[in-house]
Length: 395
Image (cartoon, rainbow, N blue to C red; front, side, top):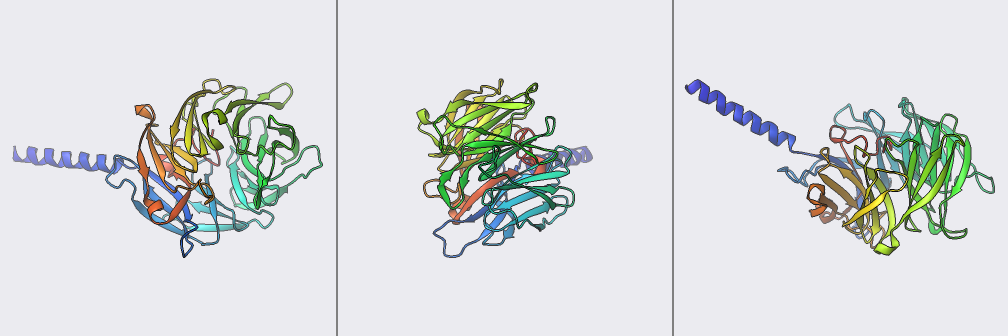
C-alpha cells in the first residue's frame, strides 16, 4: 500500500511539473533604448509571455546586439531553423541558426542594401528576398549559404519601378513577389503610392500599381503586404501607412495580373498609421494594427477579397507587430514604431480573444527598463505557421 501511495504521489508531482513546464509561451523581442536613455543599447530578449506562467513577463535570456545596428524586424525561414534580423542602421543582415544553442549571430554583408526592412523566403526554402528602403532595390539571396545573389532595381520614369521598398510577399504558385513603396527613410514627406510586381524565379520587374484614392502624388505609403492563406485565387492584403486604409489585390489567372481595390478606411474610427497584419491558422480571421493611437482591428476573412470588420481592440501607442498564442486564445501586440514620439509606448498588450477581445493588461518589462521593443516573434516550438512571419511566411 505504501508503495502504491508513493507511486501515486510521484505521478502527481510529475504531471504537475509537466503542466508547469508546458505553461510557457516564449517570444523573441528585439529592443533598443528609448531616446531619453544616456547610453544606447540593443538586444534580443527571450521572454515568457504566457499569462498563466509563473515566469510571465520575465526575460529568460538576452542576446546582445551592436548599439548602432538599429535592429528592426525578425523573420523565419520556411522550416523555422533560421531567424533573419534586418537592420536600419547598417547594410548588414544577421542570421541565427535556431538549431544551435546558445544562439549565435552571423553577419551577412549586403553593401548594396541601405535601410533593410522586410524579408521573405521562397517555398522551397532556397531563396530569400530582402527589401532595401534606403537604396530603392531588392536583394535576392541564397537561403542555404546565406549569400546575396542579385540586386533588383528599376527606377522611375520606367513604367515599372521600385521606390522606397518596404513590405514584401511571395507566392511561388504564381511565380510572383510583390513589393510596397513606402517612404524615404530620412524624409517621410517623400512617400510612395504603389505596389510593384516581380517575377519570383528571375527577379524581373513586371508591373507597378497605384494604391491610393487621391490623385498622384497621393503619398499613401503602402507599407505591409501579405498573401491571405489558402485563398484561391490568390489574394494579397496591403496597409497604406499614410492614407490609413486597407487594400486587397486579387490575382486574375487568365490575365496573370492583380486587380487592387480598397476594402476599409481607418479614418472614421479615428485611427491612423495602419501597419502589420496577422492571420489565424485557419485564415478566417485577419488582425490589423494601427499605431496612432494604438488599436488592433479584427476582420472576418472568410472572403479575403472583402474582409468584414468585426471590432477594434485598444492596444497602446505604436501598436505594431502581433502574434497569436499556439491555441489562438491570446493575441500579443508589441507597441513601438521606430522610437517615434507618440507611437512608442514600449509595452506588449495582452488580449484574451476567448473573452471577446478583453485586454488583460500589458507586459512592461522592457518599457520600465527604458527600452522599446521593435518586433515580437514566437520561438519556433510555439509558432503558428498560418498566422506568422515565417520567412515572412505569413501564409
